[in-house]
Length: 361
Image 1 (cartoon, rainbow, N blue to C red):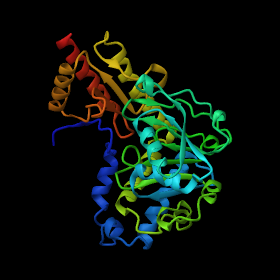
Image 2: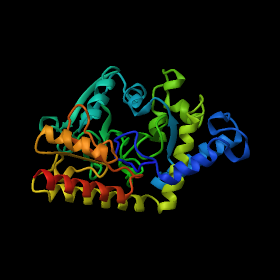
Image 3: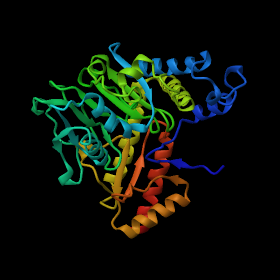
Image 4: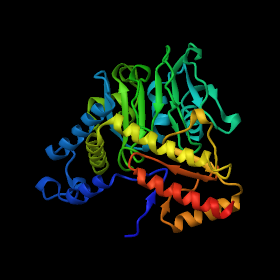
């Protein structure tokens, strides 16, 4: 096969060792004679995969014992409304920090089930930075505060999680989960689609404080009740077995790589190298995000004009680069540096960018 360099924003690349192991055993798992996707979700072979994946997420992220780990479906997008249905009571408001398109969508979906308020926003500056966040300023009737830890479209990221105040804190970590440590004392509920850093599309990881789950509404159908899914160990209905299996393999890989600190160090190294190439290009490449809010997962940048961007993206595609186009809503270019992107691929991209710049400066 021709070598490709996968910088897609999502679904993103999966580590080569994971793909090779899946190729070897996924379609005849542990001499059962059945593919993982054919196993009963009540069977011992599948439950081994299921609970080992949960255990390894807990180990990698150092998740405290007073949190449950769930495997759900519907993508991270379903959590926009599901969190409101579970935790937003009629006499309360959900407070949102708007730092990009996905936080806007989360607020819009929650507003269909109750009152919402905007705690902070950088929309007026085209989301070039993450807002300054003071959780103590949330109204007294706040049911929860919703944050987005990383913004794939605009290339910004929370550099530090804000200190928790009175209201529970819910965080969409879809695009940077398993890339760095999480301060669980300041987070009550985290959710993430797996398809960027934790496997393949189809399973959504939820990590939730048990006391928050216990406070959830009792008036919900079981299928959208976090309490129900937690009580049934995410086996209330058939889970996406193949996707959970891939998450288990990815957590195997992270542990083999040295755990979360090694992964975080690799992420910083990749991002620093690419941002340096942008900053040292004499303005030919221009980063969208302010320096203090730059994402280590999604590097967004522009070229001098749109025609040159189109030529850059076409030549990049011809050279084997995948997914360098910016989101359709904002244009430009974007390189996503998820965990499975090797540093060497970043080096090849930087070399391509330098050569393109010298030809067109």
